[in-house]
Length: 589
Image (cartoon, rainbow, N blue to C red; front, side, top):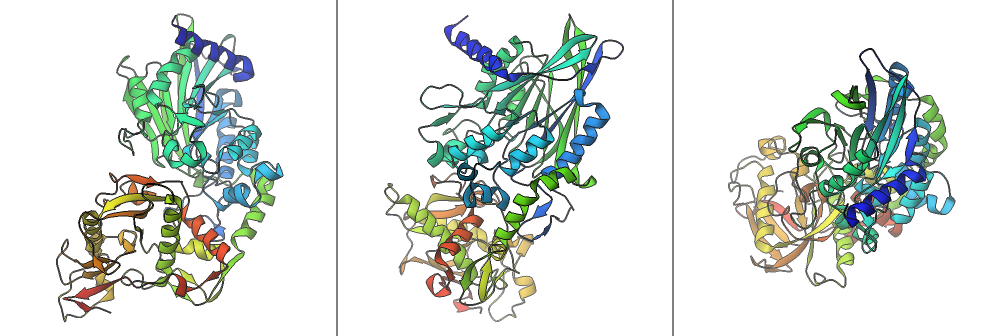
């Protein structure tokens, strides 16, 4: 045995000695020495403990009538445990738990658990439901390592992350795996090993929190190291809970290991029976991937997001040479809108929920004028300029002292809501959230003048072509070719006109910076949201542009904090009409 492998096995033995080989209640063997067990999995809960939309101050609902929250998950888990037998079931989560809603934010920033010592609502709910293990997601690191450590200590379930290692020692910073022992009446117990893997993108997305402290290793290589150890310790079933999508794509090229490596783990690592994954927020009831080394089919499943779905995996185990082996596996995802919330979870979290409701309804600033988004799709409005101002200021401040500090900072925003309004007078957290309705984070990318123009040309296809002198119908002017409002990207920091009399790709004219035409090779830093930077909408250049800022700041929360700090929303400090629609140089409006 190599010294390196010896160290791995020693570390694994130490892990087991620390109490990770956990007993369960007996399962019953059927005739023919077969046993069926059920594994349930949630993922990407993102702070949705209850079925509540804090920004609308109402029960959650969407166009598909999905429900959200751990209280819904709890009811479904209780039903499955009652149906299959508590001793036949296990429950895991694949990450992104403690960030995403005002509930999470409140107990990270307003009344942080690191100061009060209060149990985090997500820990309280997961402990009450009885999770067997949870895996770290990339958003677990958003609020810093002290808060994450506090949450980990509060969790009764082991918190896993095998590929998150100490930057100094290279040893796992979190528990790599657990082995759950399920007793079988009249037969050998079944041992289920669970390896947890998180997302390497944390190294960039939360650089300020983890740089010099943690490193995030390749998921496939980490699984290749630990799966044989788990098998060697007697695991009959090996599961991987991975906070990683399954498309094999990497957001950062060769800079980091592959981000969405769930299917690659199934394909390239022998000895894995199933991969329970998350991160992509997709509903994947069942997918099979063939392992290259063994030819075996490995099951994958992802339960969407926010507690809208619960993955349910059924394994049949049979005896082979005196050991249990998986003879069959299948999975599905269940919609939690088919069950009521568990009243025990609702009651448990009511005090923390009520505090959060009070927070989102509080007044954060006074607006000196009513600002409406109604005309934002086709004109430069102050309410969108507010987003631009906050984004540009955040990125510019973060670039201070870096090689990019001298570059002009531009900003991109789109009209997410035509109904958003800041009333004249009191503005609440909910008012601000109504303007920015998506859970995006902020990045800064470096673009040339030529790339900026290409980007604007692509965005300008949002408008229908209208000849000079022809009537302008607001009903048909926008959304040309089915382009949604959220792809109507507008740019601050430069001035330009969009000539809707011209064909697509020839519409951007008079593009200037500080009164001078933008040159093709001029360099800019552009504040942009993560959806757009990752390829959403198919805009040119941004997915391959150098990322110069990514602190995983939530844009919606940044808007709230900016308003709170200022106390006043005064259009005179941020409104700037820097673009307009024209036809042959004549303004449309």
